[in-house]
Image (cartoon, rainbow, N blue to C red; front, side, top):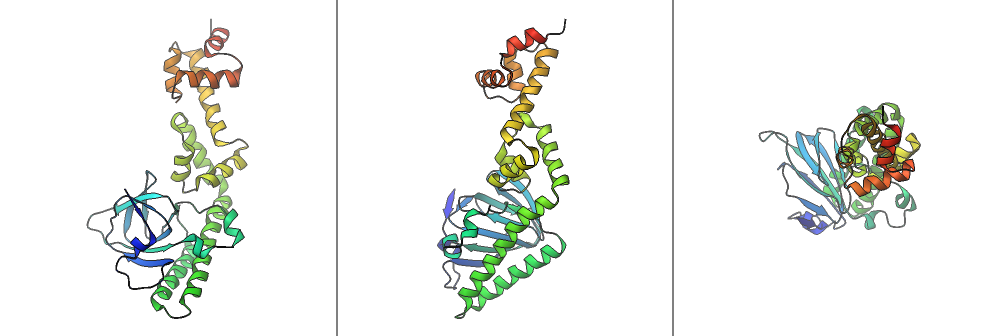
Length: 274
């Protein structure tokens, strides 16, 4: 896997804006690589399969892909014969946000952002302005680009935070249903990515709305299932440990005793149905 610098992203581009690159990718395919810069991709035409940090997403016209420093990704056309056009905006965060306190505490947008209606029009217009200004390249270009890109990132952060919170009931219900249906293998990072969240923001979002952090919620679901299996089946304890998603029997014993005050064997003996 390659680690791309911003200079590598310039390729044969004649522009002299080393802190920012804007281009159109119509090839519809890339090799797996990681970033030393931030990249914002906007799908103008067609549909793609994006694989980001091992999670696969289907993206199409109007979707935004936000890739942070260190993210690993690759993409390909959803259909081999389809036409695609993706606007890529790549920049160094230290060049754009140096000394801007708000960006140091704000959560990064999720990897996948799907704005709707007026939001989508506003974001697309801003991206097109960045694209046009980048190709103007006069003495005002650098200042204008910095302001446009900062505005774009602010809007994406606002959308990621405010947008998700506004539709909390429906979205959070989907998250809980997903976790409840597969808690034995649930992972915070992959769950966050599936729903388009940054993992650190998702952790806070989950705890705020559930009143319990993600790992504790999953642990509680696993222990409750194990209690049911201990009482209502004759499965050996190592089999129950595996069914509940524990990596080892010793890890299961530690968590079970911590949460119940007794070993699984003792719990089974005390609660066995006669």
